[in-house]
Image (cartoon, rainbow, N blue to C red; front, side):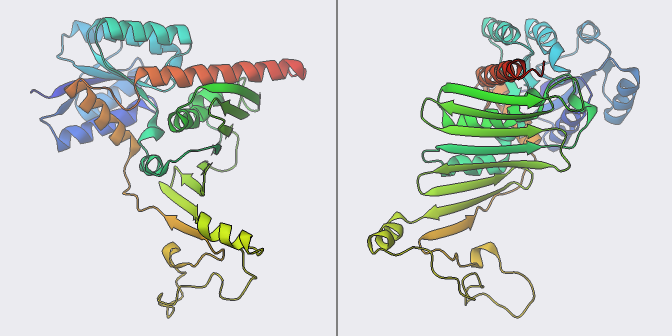
Length: 365
């Protein structure tokens, strides 16, 4: 099978990373993929990346097609308002697509893309990058029956994505993860949000209840003084804390037998504080001044164990593009198909409706 020839449409903050990773994949496996072209309307960017990657560049999709290059797939990395128009042209030309999140600006546009993909039997993946975070993969392996989520995604202000609000810009990552982990229809949405430094919502807090009874609280801000990317979930006898940036997963597990025995005996499972409650395990060397490792710390509560997952680090974008290319080669469903992208877009848009309704009730509009 010849290598897949891939184009990138848009060389902004996201597109330039797609270019970089496709070239890295080409260098590692030239028999599998080749970075074939870039479409970018900005003259300076187009010139820069033509030199950097030694590839043909075009100002428009029409110019790309006029060149009659062999193409199999494309990454769409243009602003969200242009997703549908670009996707339609590429699908009609027979290309498989990876569309950066959010899927589209409206559900009607998303449905149009879905219809075209089905009609032309094309693969469409949506770029929900956090699905490929190794810490998320580790979390999925630990799932039992999640009943409560707490998500925080805070960012320092940047004019990078002001074409969309904070829900579609940042919170949508966590909405997608929680939808995938709960696998349950949404029952109720409550939301509040405010514009702070832009004309769109810059900070939002959301409560979502699912038909399963699971509840999720989401906070997203792009006017924070720090970067935070964390998700915590609770399920029977377990608490999991996921750090997207560090690609770490901490798990606190409860031994119900020990806890039940303590309660039956009329005593608390938590012992009185002692000077040795959280000291290193006796087998841990103490000659150095280094703090004990997590695995070496004795938890002060009987019946509780704290573990840190051994997670091999990986770049989520590379894992995402590898998954997309595998789906194209094998004609199989990508990890985040268009239907999943539509589902999270629907939830995000309903959250924005609730934010608008709350603003109207409170006189903020």
